[in-house]
Image (cartoon, rainbow, N blue to C red; front, top):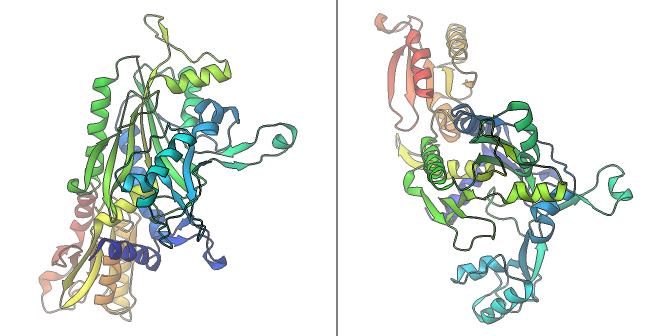
Length: 467
């Protein structure tokens, strides 16, 4: 299977099995916008829960928040988004397709520094025009490069009509953490080091959304900010990097598909920056960023707001602006990485099948319960009883009595259900072997192997697998 075929198959499976739908599809869709369907919602919720458990509930002195999307326009001035949050674009003069100049230069081994001015990046682009062709029509004739700001402008009540500053949808979710930093310090009295975590919406005016959920115009970011004493960043930063890599592996991602990559060109305020990259169908690309941001963010907001954002040590009364270690991950990128890593095709019982080898704790459905025949009331009643028993362990226990048992298994394989449980005549004592009464057939997704297990043992068995 080629990488291109893998991507096509993942997108097809996502729609066919209710993971992801194109946004506004009945009106022709909207580029870069996707809806998570019933199975996608469950998978995404499980990934979020795993993240919250790891970054907040599994650590001491961490706090969750959920900040509002609209923010005072001065926030985006202080953060640098109104002036520095842009992509360098050029347009094909033949077909009007637009290209990300930094990306196409990077593809031929030329680095376009994000700190470059338009004049500097135009000079670099001009030097390599002969090597660059339009992806759509293969022409080599492009306009000058211009920087296109990615903030999505909006309006809010009478604010924009009365003032000169527009409001924006958030270009990144983490600003809410910086804005609530002082409130958290005042209300929770945390001792440094302490952390704050948030999953929030972000919007970017991408000219050319691509690679399915990887680069969208609307997405969710999972961000953490660890507030530390100045100059106590090195050891904490290395520990954070290791912790985050181990978390991705704990989700079931193949460690061979994960790697660290250090940023070659740091923004002026950063002490260090690394990405955890995943090997997507098109190659390694950013999954999560881990950034040593020094005291830049709080210092900027202190300057623009004129509010003292220094931390006061409760024991020494020392005052200082904390430094920040950040992690930032797109939930859609994680979702896509998990699907790509889990996608499998094999032959089972003489037939080709597709299945998702998802870790049980993130699978949208934990088990499926099914009566062997749906027209036998005694089988159906017993199957309902078993399902109710297992739903005491976890609510995501599916019911399927449509079609023959083989087709049911294939449907569950495609959505990544790790276990299928079938109630047959032996279960209810109507078979040839009385010893099999009150046992069921338990089928394992990855191997297709089946075993008999006592109904009484099922809850403990499932609970252990979900851990």
